[in-house]
Image 1 (cartoon, helix red, strand yellow):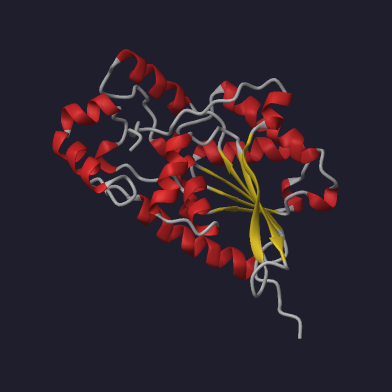
Image 2: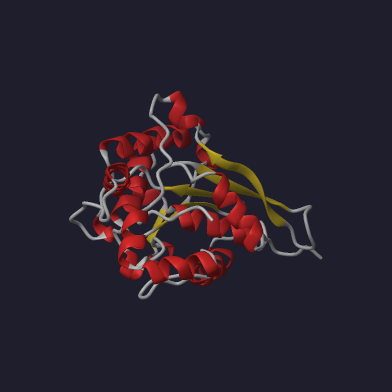
Length: 257
């Protein structure tokens, strides 16, 4: 008896292109300022010009794939920078949006920072020293700022996303466009990591803008087959297109710990 495949055939998870928020955060950190100077809501923060170039470069890479190997399902965060990355990517790949399932899913949104939103590391220490100390004690995986989320909170909503993916997109090729913490939390779930393992991944490097992490279904793995990692933070398409690789953390800055 043949067991029906549970997972998509392929999943690509991509962080959005460089955003205006990434640029503003770098400027604020370099100047030692407590607040990141950006007027828009985090939800509405657009791509930078470089971020658009990065999305185009990655789109060309997808466009070079045989038609049958390209994504057929696009799931993206509701934030402007992720939606624009997905749209530019599809255009550059020559994929008609009408030919794919394009779903904006708020469960893929950025981790919510609550009262720490727009604060730099210096600003957090200055304005909320007790929260800075609490975070250092509890660790970033479990620490939840007032009005915000911990990594565990993000993982909880991503478990729901994976339930949807395994129910509705089995056997398909799925592209997910989201944010740095989302990429790492998907890795935590799909690679069955623990707290120490995923925080070590986070300590080693930030997820590059438009970096690709991918998984392919292997029917020979496990009892019913499983998704196997193929690419981790892959940025070769950007380098080949001459688009600089950027690895700025999303705002607000969070110390590595």
